[in-house]
Image (cartoon, rainbow, N blue to C red):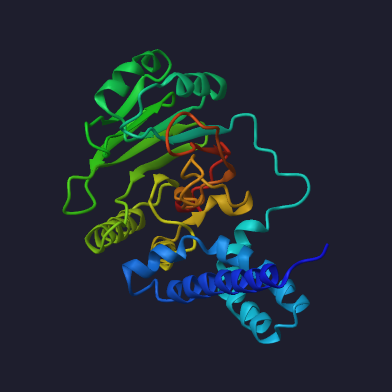
Length: 325
C-alpha cells in the first residue's frame, strides 16, 4: 500500500505522542509512594505496558533505536508489578472440595435503579456469603427475599455510598461495625462458623482517592485495618471495594503490614471497575486471605447493572488455622 508523505508524517507524530504519553505516565507513577496525584497514574500500569510493548517493534522497524531502547527501559517498572497478575496458571486448575464456601461481593452503586440482574445472578450463583457495598434502604427492601435463605445478617444500609451489609447462610457467631477513619465510614467484621472452623470476614469499602484528603483517609483506613488483622489469629478474608489496584505502592505497603495474600494472583488480572468502556478498566475490588485461609479461586461475575463487576471467591472448607499448629 502506498502512503503519502503527509500520512507518514502523521504516523511519525502519532507514535511519538503515544510514546510521550506512556513515558510521562510511567515516570509519574514512580512517585506514587509520595504523592496522591502520582498514585492515580500507578493504577493504569497494564496499559502503559501494552503501549510500550507495541512501540518497541514499531520503533525497531522504523530504525528509531533511541526510542526503542527508551521504551524497553520504561517497560520494566510496569512489567515488574503487572506481569505477576498476567502469568496465570496454565493447565488444569486446582479443584476445590465439594464443601467449598462460595462468597460474592458486589458494589451495588447507591444510584442503581433496578436489581433485576442482581437477583437473577444471585439465584444462579447461590453463594454461601454475600457482601453488598453501597446498599441503600430501597435496595435492602428490594432484597428482603434473601432473608429466607440468608438468616444471618450484619451491617447497615445508608442513603449515601457507604452502606455495607453481609448476608450469610453460615452461622455468624460475632459481628461488629467498624470505623477505620475519622469520617463516617463503616466496615463490617463477621466471624462465620464453617465446617472447617471459624473465619473472620472483613467486608470493606474504602474511600476513593479523588483528592489529597480522600487519599489520606483511604490510606488511614488501610493501616487501621492492618492493625486489626494482626490482632487476630483466626483465618481471615478481606473482601470488597478498596479503591486501590494491586499496582499501587499503597496497596503493597498494606499487604506487607497486614501479612495478607492477594488471592487473585493465581487466577489473573480480573478487572472489576468500571463496567462501561471509560475510564480504562482496573481491578479495585479485592479478595485477600490471611492466617492460612485457603482460597482456591477468584473471578469476576457478570454485569449486574452496577458500575462494578461482582467478585466471586471460593474457599476450601479444610481451613488451616496456624494457631492450632
